Length: 236
Image 1 (cartoon, rainbow, N blue to C red):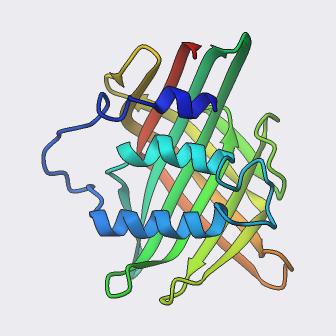
Image 2 (image 1 turned 90 degrees about the horizontal axis):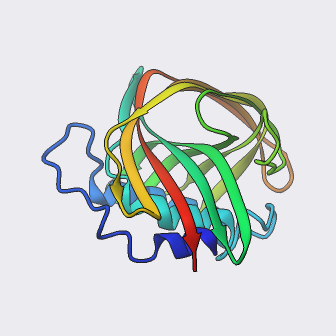
């Protein structure tokens, strides 16, 4: 509720009218990423309900971030290219007499866009506690209020849009620094664009039966495109 109220009416205020950028994300590709994430999280019943569902943290985060996430860094690896974007949340606000303070980091990466079917072969989504610098170990439980712990997911979307999800059992999310330009928006809700530096590794098992394991690593130490969402003040 806190995030959705802060976001209301702020999308137009934070819109960006920048020119052509080599890191710009094509519209259909971004839609494919979001469809894969929505399929994995919005209607899932096997994962933590605090994160999934129509009112879970993922749904609120996606409503806040996707309108402003139009750039992603390209990281080549052999014949593949992974695109990655960092997201940092800085929340210090009051609602209904309750003071809410929250800092968290998310890394969203993807590869294998299929234009013919508008699907994304692989999506990585990692969450960590705090903002840069972050040194979190990944595990299977969603506990972002515990420093040093994070959670990660690997999502595969077949060309028929069927989604398979793996949940982290090991690995890490490290961020070393972040830097942002001038924030745009309102005193209550604003968004800044910049860069986030770090790296990640993930070992994940299939949901729900752990029958298969996937591993991956990504180094964005030279800087990945990022957005920072800040929420302040007293909310209705």
